[in-house]
Image (cartoon, one colour):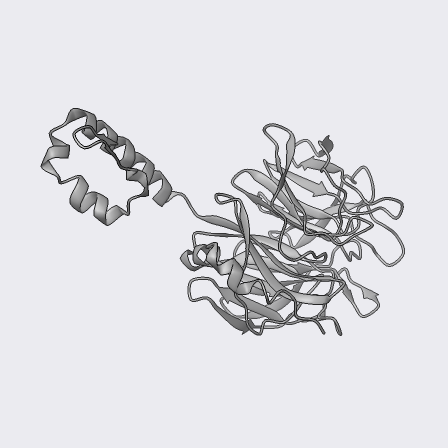
Length: 363
C-alpha cells in the first residue's frame, strides 16, 4: 500500500493483527480513500487465510550414524524451507524406532538405544514443550512399524533380540495401557505401515529368512489381518505412507539393490502402480506427507548414511531436493505435527545456532 503524499510503502500483510485492526482500519484518511479500502480488504483476506491454515511441520526424530545413536530432533518448515535442530534435554537416544502423532502430541516408542532393544515410550507435548514417560509396550520392539487410527497407536512386528515378530499391540491414551490384538499373517521386521480409510496397511520387511514383497491390511472392526496383492519387488527398510488416496511404498532394499523406486496401491482397484522414482536410493529413512507433498529424509544409500532430503508432488510427478538436515542419520522416524505454537517457535532460525553444538548423544 503506497501513500502518495509522502511516498511511503507499507507491507500490510507483515503487520500484526491487533495493530492492523485497531489503528489502520479505523484511520479516517484510510477509510475515506476507495483505493486504500480495496487494499485493506485484500490484506484482511490474506491475513485470515494465514491465520486459519493449520501450521504443519515435519519432525525428524532420532536415528543412528557412525558417531552413534542420537536423540536429535529436527524440524522442517516447508514455508521457510529450512531445517532447525530442536532444543532437547534427556530424551532417550533411539534408532529403528517408531514415531506417531496423536491428539497433537508426539509419541516415540521402541527401537534401539545403542545397547539394547526398547519397549519404552516417550510423549512430547509441543504446547508445553515438555516430555513425559508413557506406558511401555508389552514387547520390546526394534525395527517396529507404527500407525495411528481411531484414537489409538498401533505397534506392529519388529524384532526382540533374535525373534522376528508378527504380534501387534494397541495403545489407548485414555487409559495409558497397551493391549495385544490379532497377529499379522507374517513376521515383519523393518516393514512400514500407514492408515487409509479406516484400515492399516503394512508392507514388506524381513521375517528372519526372506525379504518380503507381501503386504497385508488390518480391519479394527473384525480384528483381522488380510493378505493383499504383493508389491512388484521385495522391500526391507521401506517407507510407507498414505498419499493422494493410495498407499505408497518407497525405497528400501531387496537383498541385491538399494532402491529408489516407488509404487502405489489403490484399495479400490486392489492394484499396485509404478510412480516416478526418487532422485537417490535410500532405506531406513523418514517419510511423511505435508501440504500435499511426500517427503523422504535421511537414510542409508548403500554407501553412506545421509542427511539429504527430497519431496515429491504427485500432481506434477516431479521429485525435488530440499535442504539437508543438520545431522546425517538412518533408522530415524518422521511425523507431521500440526498447529502447535511452540513447535513454530522451535523452528525459528535463531534456534539453530543455539542447538548446533549439541547434535549427537551416543552410547
